[in-house]
Image (cartoon, rainbow, N blue to C red):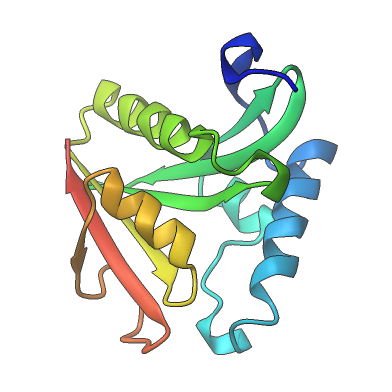
Length: 156
């Protein structure tokens, strides 16, 4: 068994249309699709991630793609997008590292507020976000008031 301290964890910017990023996004979609009707699936497509200029990152463990996440910067806040950690890598603190990385990215660009939308059935994600200091708010931006969505923010 490899100890967490023996693992090399890296987070680097990547285009969301690279093979490994696409695989991560497809796995995320496959996980969410059976849980929510299409009108409650608010994640950006790969094409929209690129078109909207979302800064996208892949976290790797010993070189293997383990998760991903992005951030879209708006004038008054940054929104976390497409957060995902593969099941085999969950419980290792990778989501928290990714959130910290995205927060540092936003802060370095003058952003002082992070926001996100997640589904009501994403219990592990909800726990992760709340542990990371996010608190629940109402819908923001162009999100509808969807009973299957939760909205969060955190000041930086």
